[in-house]
Length: 154
Image (cartoon, rainbow, N blue to C red; front, side):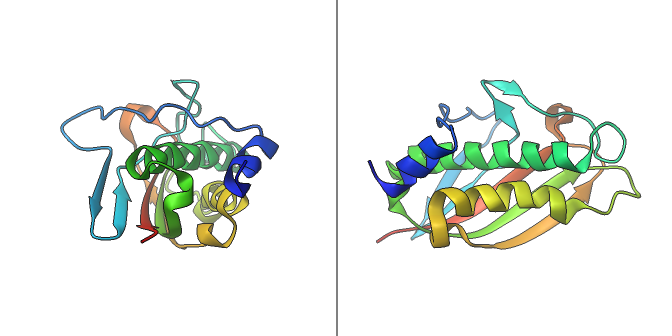
């Protein structure tokens, strides 16, 4: 068992089948050594795990958990694209979109759910640059959406 597989097992995470696109786009796109994922929603067991607005319908801790499941789905897409998580050289950057009220200011704390999971699973290869952005609404009323840029090992 690789360290990545053992980290997944330690956290009780089984990667799901990667989500199929909901419209006219690809779930990931590779160019050169970079893999770009489409935005991933907080799907758990095929269902939306968190919906609504942070600051109104959900607390920061619930948003953080939603961001974690977005990151799990990013890893599922990366595995589908690269054949193995061992093929990840590093996570370069993630962008975390947080559906929130206008006065919500803890986007960075919500984003930690995705960042922490990527580092917990991938170690130093999971450290990344990041943007956390508040938005008025996300597809399917999801609370969080995360996209990633990943460098593939050569």
